[in-house]
Length: 336
Image (cartoon, rainbow, N blue to C red; front, top):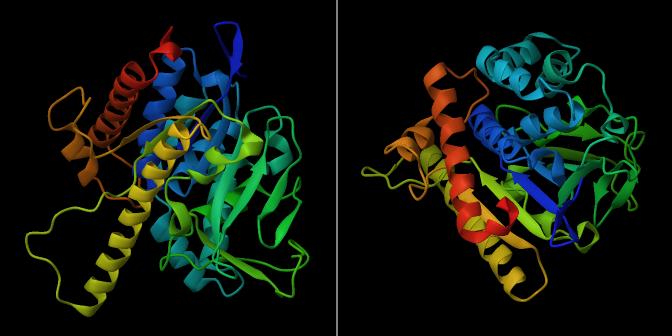
């Protein structure tokens, strides 16, 4: 899958941020632009978080199928799952809201596939957050390597039979709408005395999925980061309510992590210890193809509800334009 530049093999990684269906549609625009540039099938690694796991997981599960992008677009235009999953979990005494979320992904996106079914595509990380340790927890498959799940502190275990739908549900279980996904010892026997782990949205740890891009084992030459998450916006009338302060505080913390991850990418590359970074965020006006695209795209809510024609159009157009702009400026060698 690697591309050849000047007679040498070069590896490209793509990180797909969280941000609900909005982010998934934003990433879909990136997929379509990469396909147009004959680069989509040359990706070596996908690192996915939350809404990015929906898009990246579906792409990987249907790798090489000619209609994969059209099917993903149709899904984002026609499905709304957050409310139904929430209500279903409340009313069903035998199933939680996170189970309902996984069932919806199983039915509409993955059809019984497990991590072992990702072997033919690029290496894929579906990232969650481990509430037992505070670490990034990954489900990883593809790239001709073994399927695993785990983290650096507790260790990793073989996970070929783990359902993709449950991995994506764990990655996109944003609190408090969805409870965390619990893994008991039968699923994940950790290397310490922890009795079980609970996994919540990967965006709690790193909403952009940057960490796998920087691992030595992945040895990337280029790292593209598609950030369709929620940028922190200036509030003319900031909240005074207790719950509002908590929500805004979380937003500020996530914005700090966002900035630090971009800084980390840049400095690792300058130090010769990381791939060349190419990143763009949904609120960027630099490179937008139509004036106002950044404002419109950023104003779309980050839930799991179907998107209308105008929303889908601006999200895909905006991300494609930003990717083209960044490649032309920072990595023209990729374009040939």
